[in-house]
Image 1 (cartoon, rainbow, N blue to C red):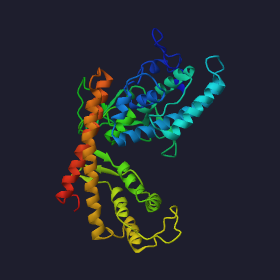
Image 2 (cartoon, helix red, strand yellow):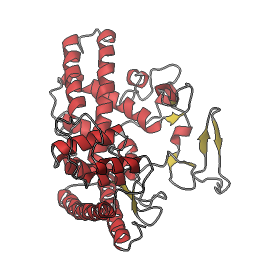
Image 3 (cartoon, helix red, strand yellow):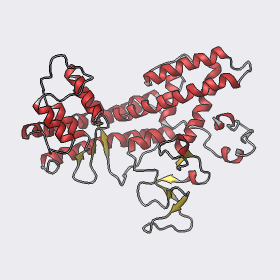
Image 4 (tube, rainbow, N blue to C red):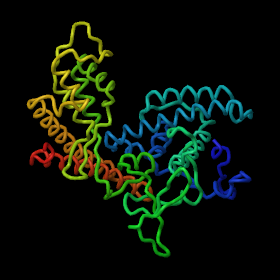
Length: 393
């Protein structure tokens, strides 16, 4: 909100009006045209920028992560717009206009889709754009520093001038923050010479997270490739109808619903520990007691009781047959991903034909291509790992 109120002007007015933090605010990025959230907000507001093709070419997991991020933004904007009702009393903006934006923000927060086209009065577009600028400055530059007893308290995030100039690397970072005292330690394996760029490690993030949160990807991340297949699994559960709904409740009750990923590092390529319990349950066809509600995750059949014992760590797997079908299902999922990644790369190539791609657009296309290539690489690596028996052992 503070950045929103003190954004530097355009043209000759490049200095923030804030007497205390103006010099710092004035060196922040002037815009975030190359950030995928900017594409999403721009597209949803009907701005005449040629960004829709970039959104349409994103892999499913990236689209989902970006939608979740947009929901966060619009919820925050909804709060800020309520504050604006009390702050701004000029002819530039009135209560009816703000309330219209609030309704639109609530609608977007519910849908979270980039194809939504809200009717925002033109008089508020500058305010939305300015808040997006402020929001992305905080989201892309803040660091975690615990000042509250609760580790998840929102006050544990702060902007740190100078430090926030450092770029990210997944390996050989020159410094890492430590708490509770804001001290930075350089690992003994890191060497820094005069004139070298100082890197930080933002965290062990996947490329999907780096892209949606910060707007960049790593071509060869040291923590390897990661592939989220939640969209495929959710579809498989929906196809089971009422039984699938019950299975979803059972997985939610045991904290195993969603965040199902595949990895190629450390080798051999493997599924995440969260994915196997979901696949084991998916292969079952239990006969639930008459009247069993989808909101009642009880385990009244023998095979469901065994499955629950695997969740508790009392058994390694449900049965040999169940385990065999689990790995067969994984193979099929990998084949789906490998095929759709090829189709995604082709679609991206077709969408770029005839377009003048330079600057951030050229990098955006490169980043999206890297995301698709990572999906293909991880899926093929896991297929080879399963077929060789390495992943199953």
